[in-house]
Image (cartoon, rainbow, N blue to C red; front, side, top):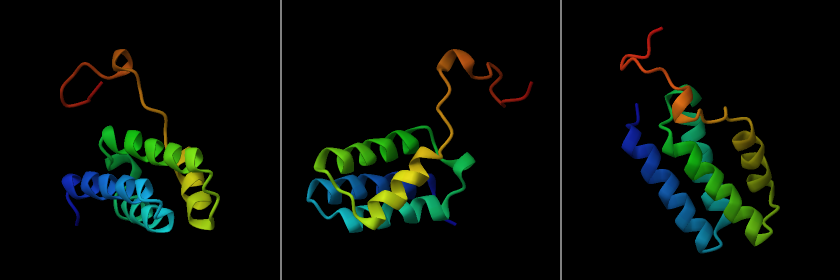
Length: 94
């Protein structure tokens, strides 16, 4: 079982790889996070980082198979809730 810190570190590394134009490696790292951590267990910052990575791919015009597959997975992530829409109880119960 990987820790939350592991997922964030992997996504930071993926963004660094994308900045170095190593798009295939960046997509593989991000895909590993999505394969390992259930979507509902991702911290709020993980989808933000994934979407930023997707933006890096788009800005660079990257259209490789790995990048396109990752783009579809990122698009399928649930939308983030605005703070006003979150449950005010600390344990998240109704």
